[in-house]
Image: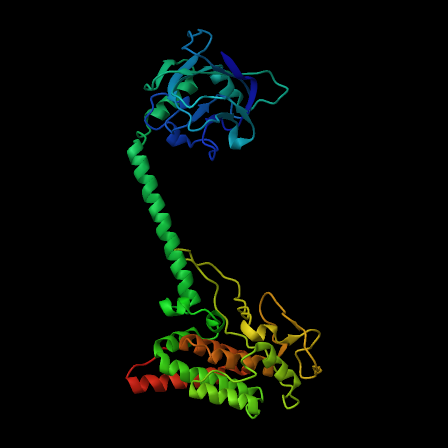
Length: 442
């Protein structure tokens, strides 16, 4: 015989537990006694026992004995019940309410018969709460030994409170069968998977402006997610327009960005725009990114132009399907997506983005500035540095990516005046759809 527990334990709400589920913190009352005839030791939940005490709050005498065979029944115990129990894991513990303290029981993963014996339950119920300075009122003995599964039973009943709990247990519906429990768990898992799927789809739909993206948009890469916050409907319209219009949009964006930055009359910019219009590769210095930036920095004809940052329109925060509506804080401005590609390295170390930024000669040093949160409208960006990625983007071999990257770079180049650019791109898309007899949706 072993006695892993022998002394006093603290109870709250007249309960203490045996738990063998590593994730468990004690069973629920109704489920623990479902289908039982005895109401002092609830064993209806696999791997757990609910042990009822007469004392509501305080310390009770408590002993746990692990035996090899069924022990004789001691007449000193006033109320006695038996149940069957099988641990769910190698670790079984006696656990106080809310897991405040545990005692290791070292039970094997086998079938046990459990006898729970009580003394002084009615007196403890009347006492209700026992301070540490008061004498012990009730005590309990929990005995376990290997035995085949068998129905629960009341062996001895004396206390009125024990009769009350036995009556309570007999009014509970029977517990689910293992098959019913497995089916309920399966249905709950499927429901959770479906809810997760709906949440992901709703989030994706919101990110793409209210409609799910085509496979082409999902795979296009580049700066598509940079353009989405500014005009998601335009992104879908460009996607649906087809390669011919996408090429025209890319060229339009590259031309408008160059003009806005004051670069359109430079010979090497004109040559690049001509190559784009004729479907040829970009000429030098655009064949080498470092040479392209060096040309920009060293050409004295490049104007020092700056513009306030382009800030996308506000959007309400995401609310998952099934989430009840509640007062929401004022929406924050969406953070400006970072520029990718050559423009990400276009800021020179130590340069100010304003028009008074000094020019340097020789090989420039570059740095990337990363900010978190909404863009600061007071910050200004260099338009020439933002315009060159529009030409690089427009030269992408994939027409869809070329259009999206070029339009995004042009949006950044236009800065706070970006709606003017987007209106012109929309006009191009709408004109194309009028020719085809279809209409894009804004």
